[in-house]
Amino acid sequence: MADDMGYSDLGCYGSEISTPNIDKLAKEGIRFTQFYNSARCCPTRASLLTGLYSHQAGMGTMVTTEPDTVKGAYQGYINDNCVTLAEVLKTVGYKTYMSEKMACR
Image (cartoon, rainbow, N blue to C red; front, side, top):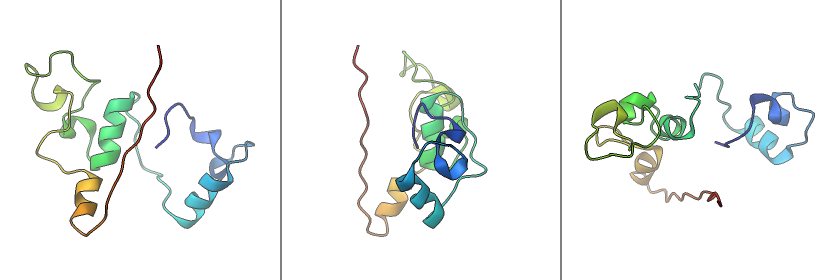
């Protein structure tokens, strides 16, 4: 998943911008054609990582400022009732890693 990109920013989806490595992944791998963006990064990431609607995963909104008082669909973190793709892959021997950019202010 890439933040701050539009659907047509990738060559495999018709962009005039050259994205050969991403195009190769799309050609040889999986293209998401029925994935729903939640318009905000945290809920969208939760959906991508769990395969659930963001509310089912506990990320119905951006991270809450009062995580100890909010429960359920809006608690602001992935709940214990779902598993992530990394957790599933671990059960069959894969090692997974995560990296992210940090915004400077």
